[in-house]
Each structure stands twice: as C-alpha cells, then as structure tokens.
Length: 626
Image (cartoon, rainbow, N blue to C red; front, side, top):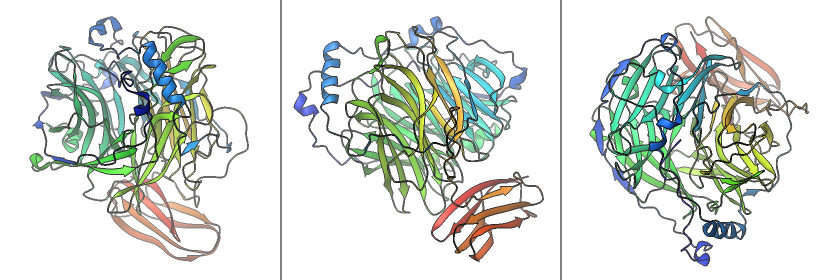
C-alpha cells in the first residue's frame, strides 16, 4: 500500500536506559461506545458479468504519486540507537532459536502471481482461496486463477470491477480479497482517494453475486470524512467487519484507529446496506478484525478485534455487538487484557544481501490476518506480529482460546531459529488445529525470500515443529530509497477440504529499484513443505483420519475414522450455524477402521459439519449437501 506514515522508530531523544526499562503498565483504559456514525452507501448497483467487462490495464504509478505520503525517514543516528537497543535487548522468554525437524514432502502449486506492472511500491499482496478459484490482488491490480494455477482473468486494474459505477472513484490500493465461505461469495475492497489529500474519501466494496467471480458483482461505495487507511476486512455471520487507521483530511495527520461493520445480509443480495463505524481514542494501538474460517461461532457471539501492545506485554481484545434492528444500539467495548510473555518492537530496519538500502519491518503491529475458528468445545484465534528476537526480527505468534467466559492465551512463541530476519508474517489454522506460519526472510548474506513453517495440533506448545521450507528464494535486492516492503501478506485455508493453505507474498528475481514479483503457493501440514526435495513423510495430522466420501453429498456418503485403542465414540452432525442435527454414532468401539453410511434425506442443501469425539479428543470436518 501507499499509506500515510507507517509506525516510526523510537525518537533519539529517548534515553537509552528508559528504552531498556522492563517496568510496563498492565491495564488498558476500558471503553464502551455506540457508533460514531451510521451511514448508507453513496452509491450501489450491480455490475455486468466480469467476464463481459473489457479488462482495464493496471494504472500507472505516475498518476498516484501525489497520493503517497512517505514514511518518516530513518536518520543514521536514530538507526544506530535502534541497532544498539535491539542488540542489547533481553532474551525473548519464548524464543524458538532452532528450527523444527519434521520433513514431509510434496508441492501442490507454486507459481508467480502479479508482478509490478504499474511501477509502484509496496505491492500489498492479498489473496484468498474459494471453492474453485484463487483471487490475488496487489495494490491496484487483481487476477483470478484456477486451483491448479491457470490464469483465468487479468491481471487487470481493480477499477475494472467498478467500470460504469456511479460517481467519480479512483483505484488507489490497499486491497483486501476475502472469500465468504458461509455464502459462497467473494469480496474485493480498496479505498478511493479522488481528492487526496482532501476528503471525502471512499471505501469501495464489491460482493460477487454468486460463487463465480467471473459473474456479476454487487458494488458499493461508502464515504468517509477522514482517510480510511490500511483497511483490513473480515467475515462474520452478522456483518463484514473492518479495521482502519484514520488520517485527517487535508493535513493527513494521525487521528486514531477505527472499527467498522457493514450489513452483510443486505450486501449479499445487493440491497442498500448500512455501515456503522467507531472512532477509537487516539491512544489505542492498531487493531485487526477476526476473520471466520470453518463453522460459525455460537449464536450471539460478537465480532472480535485485537491489538498488540509492546508497552505492556499484552494483547487487547475488543468486542463489537452488532444490532441491525437498531444500529444505534451497536456497541464496541473492551479491551480484555490478555498478558503475554515479554516482547519488544524490532526498531531497526531489515538488511538484505547486495544492497545498502534496508527495508521496513512494520513492528510491532499484528499482521494480516487475525483468524477465528470454532471447534465446538472451544474457540480459537491465531495472530502474529514482528518483534525483537536476540537482536534480529522474529515473529511472535499466538493461539488464544476461550473458556466460555473469557479468552486466554493458550500458547505463544517467537520464531527466530537463526540470525536472519523474519517479518511480514501471516498465520492460519486448519480444520484439525494444525498451524502454518509464512513470512518474508532476509539478512546480510541473503536476498529477501519467502518461507514457511508449521506445527501439528498435538505438538509441544509454543513451537513450530516443522523444518523451515522455502516457497521461493529471492535472487535480488530492492534498492528503492523508500524501503517499503509488504505491507502485508496473506495465508488462507481452502474451505472445501479445510486443510490446504494458500499463501502469497513478494520477492525479487534480480536486484532492482522496484521490479518486485509475487508468488502464490499452496501446501498442507501433512504434505508440507512446498519445495520439491524428497524427504520422509511425517505422520498425518488428522487425529483419527476422519473423512467422508463422496463430498459434496447427494444421496449418501460414507464417514470413516480409525482408532488406535478401544474408546467411547460419539459422532454428531451440525448445520453451519452450529446447531446439532443428529447423532450418528454413540457407542464404545474397538481399535481399527470404522465407518457409517450417512443419508441426508430431508436436510436442506448447504454446508454441514460432522464432529467425532473420542474420549476427550475432537476432530471436525465439513461436508456439503446439494
């Protein structure tokens, strides 16, 4: 993105002992607020089928230069102070200083995405995987691929989707692509700054009419008085939730972070949709909204937003209770303070081989995306951000769980297994509770590259147990004076099998000013890594090898599982809202292979979940009935 004022390094006016002090406050000011405003879109319509719209070529950066507010420059003195601070920081108490040792094999897909065809920096790579497509966007361009990596549409300007839309709107980037698996719909959003640096500003949101992104789209434009920078969008059953960073019209001075919710049900059918927004106090750090994967949360569960505070060694969790019957009753409140092990921002810049120019690190904000899952007996959220790790940049990652009354920190770790720097991470959990972490990596003796690691759900808490694997090794450095990198990447999970991870990030094939490229790769934990080197296969991550075939289901399907020992077994079916439909098995079974034939007669078409309980362990899988 070309965003105003990325978080600056600490001022050289700060006294070094104060920087290194370990005494930190632990309580955040609690807030409870109703919407700052409730507005309707200034325009909404339905597009022609995308496949019928002539492709608009991605725009030229020359038309956008006046809209770029560069990051504050790093002075050599300030950089020297930060290097000293980072080098003398105390050891991270949850530092993982050695890589894992598990080595399975097999690549699924691994191919180049959109390159820098418009001449801007950074790319803001975002993407998501749906039932049949992968959509990638980079700042002002997007492309649609098949699951085998075949290009089906584009690259095109994101403005192609809004061709013929009422009003004057520009394609200015900070895109987010998400797939709403509950409705089989796609969302693409970007901001529009036609009068920059003056308002009004706009957030453009398009929702596909069906699961086919080549079809028609419901298009919306929501107006903001202040600039809605760095928007991050998330799916929740009662709304599309968004976080923003607010900058003042005209001066582009910092105001505060904001939380937004859009009326999802209306947008899915193309009706006029409302937006409720909240302007948080200026002292609050940046937040991310929780994005739903898998089965829906319990009825009445609010949307979640989380921020990370290195000043207090904690995560702050906020709730947004949405009321579309009377939107004025919608309430944003919090935070619940969740203490973490001590961590600090990495305040230096990221070095790279073959260039004196260093790269932005975006520490310590939480990085795209904040993922939520409901496993029935518990709920989980995973998050990550860049922190200081033995003088280098490492990735602090978290898994939160809820015990029905409040959220707590289930596990955490800082992944920094060597002296290279890892940052711009993205984290996700599959339907079996396995976690993947993907990121940029660079160092004094290596070019910026893309790698990933992972852990199985039953592995030792706080550790990434898989060996770090390469998605692609960079072959060049970025020499642009701005040092902009990222500003985010995207790791998502295939909603069909709920186990295949898809990741996109940037790299360089040769040293240049800003001739970046992007990569798109997919892998599973049990078939990880994405490289081609043959290695022994690790044991499966599925607790009981729970599966069903065929899936999707028309008249019948066979659900099967395996037991290591004789155990009590309960197999239940739930609808997509989490309501129990029926019990399929409830008995003690011997070790070995078991199966049951399930016939969905009388059930409406849609997404369902079947859950196997063996003693105190659970495994949940999804099936589609049509």
